[in-house]
Image 1 (cartoon, helix red, strand yellow):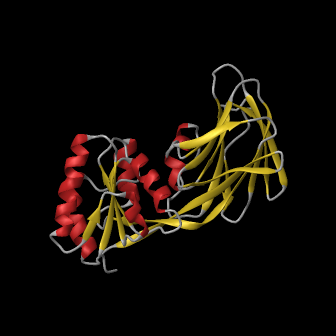
Image 2 (cartoon, one colour):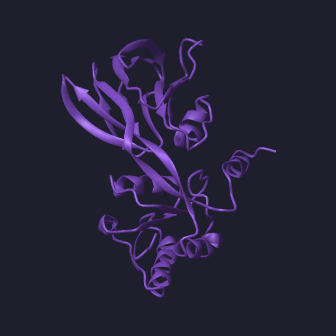
Image 3 (cartoon, rainbow, N blue to C red):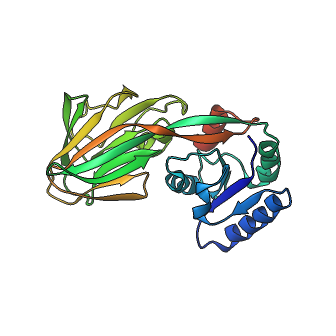
Length: 269
């Protein structure tokens, strides 16, 4: 890949990050590569550099839309499963990328739409997860789930998570869901604090359609996508989740593997 144009996505309103990003722009330009901090540049970029934490990367995936160019993720946040390259490794890693000596990992995404009274209300794309949960701590909600039209269950719980393999180490793992190798294509449905103790996470193949309907709630219920965007639901709202035709391309560091990341982030021995 011949990199001529780069878009740099950063955490907003953080002076230290802004300083590093400005230096990075100059570093690229010294190598005859046009670099921009303007998100509009994503439409013509050959490469995206994300400077922040996992949340910044999730936002970058939305900015890139259908045009998912390779992403180099630099960890300038806290706990990061997606942003694997450290700040000290940034320039050596980018030298390798400009030399064309890198591989990309394809990470699946999910497309979802929310309908109300048979009318399309909203459409989203998720790299990590779709979370339906209540806004208060007092009462459970009831959600009906179907897979390819087949009835699964009515979950009486605090909520429900539909996760990608990439998002399996996010909210899903906190709710007792499984860790799934990130380059797999699968979706996980995980109840949050289910009233029925025998309710367990379900791992589903990539080609299915997951339909969820809000059947009962006495308090506010929200749907949140990648922890960043979403809306308030009403009784009878219908959510459909499918694998997206678009995938995220993450540049994988040559000297690291996924198990190194798990050991480091989860404090495994």
